Image (cartoon, rainbow, N blue to C red):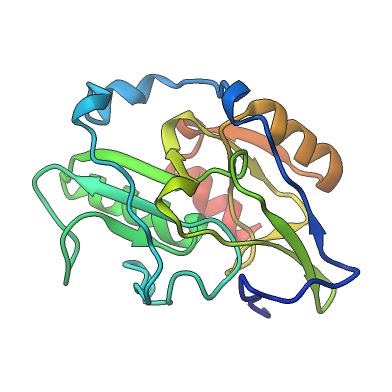
Length: 201
């Protein structure tokens, strides 16, 4: 798999899309929001993931690879080697596996954030016959994971292959599916069993 750096030069194969729907994005809210810290005023804010941070699931440097990033804040626990949040350069092989594993260990999350492709100026880059979506690390590029609509099974890859591409606007997700294939799921649809099947398919 060829990873595509976020600062790859523009080319005829590179497509940039600027979205202005941030104010209109009204993603489907799922019931788990109340379990993730309750009052939004008490939830920690997402942080910038640039600066050479290594993925807490696999050790890859965040920002050097295509695709969505994520971070999880925990109430009474912290990842090995640093304070909260735990951070990830992929969702399908990083954030969600870590989340499910630590849920089984009794860790309680207060906030989960993922790249929100409804609010970033993302790009698609072709390399070796594959299409990759850009990566973003700024604090303002993240949104509440429980409120996202995720595109799965499309022709667009992240840094580790098949990933879940999050949009706070369900309409944006539907347009992405029309353009690149796949389907959509909500946060509560993503279970450990579902994820195992997805990454192996």
